[in-house]
Image 1 (tube, rainbow, N blue to C red):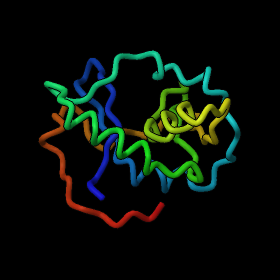
Image 2: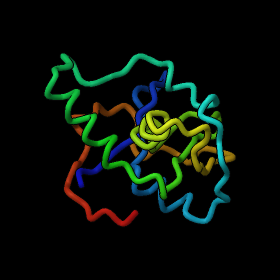
Image 3: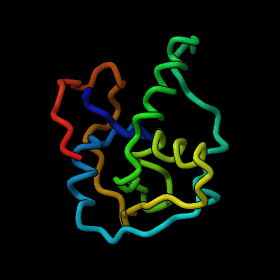
Image 4: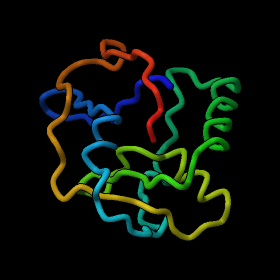
Length: 129
């Protein structure tokens, strides 16, 4: 699986968190069922690349189909989804009302500040989740 990052804009530039590190940091957090109505990203514009194509859309559909709902999504302290939007989308499609989630009380420091996504390492890593 390709390395994944969670990105958030900031005055200091783009912040990036390594999702593998987020998984490890949140591994012992309490899992709770979160209503899908609390997932504000469901009403954000879908970002599928610079110029979304049907091929890119089909790839996202495949990722949603393969998403494993047995793993909780990871939320930032403010409730933003740091990892798991494909799982959230699958839960919505399946007509579920909730999804399992863990949430940071305080966000960890980002792994990168002010670097563009294409400048980050994307070496393949084994999927340990």
